[in-house]
Length: 145
Image (cartoon, rainbow, N blue to C red):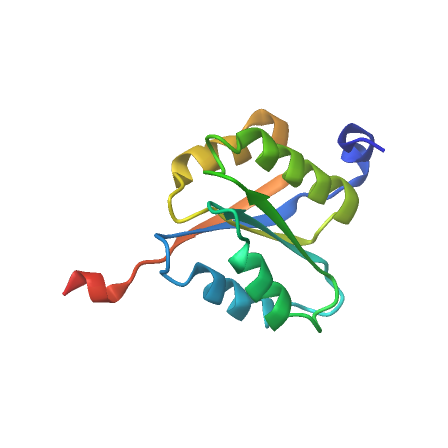
């Protein structure tokens, strides 16, 4: 079944993008959000790992292993919006087609460009699929002293 086949039988997925520099706490923030997931909902997290090792996915999977209805998908190997633009779209299409989540969190790499990610997500292709909600940008308050 292709994503086009599912298009008429879906509701728009509530989607939040969570951005910030490397090490600012994006994964920790997502963990806190996942702790409040209603049991009857399916949630998905799309993570962009800049490096070859998917640490964020491993941390989320380990700390939420009892959380049924949660799917974590990773886009590795570069910035989600640039070199990994096509893999991001493929991963996102797979989530929308196969999982049909009620809520989606997208965590670009700390090196990514949120504007470019949002441009992809708000494109005409995804407008009928995604209900883009707030973009959360996390900062390290210690850097403002």
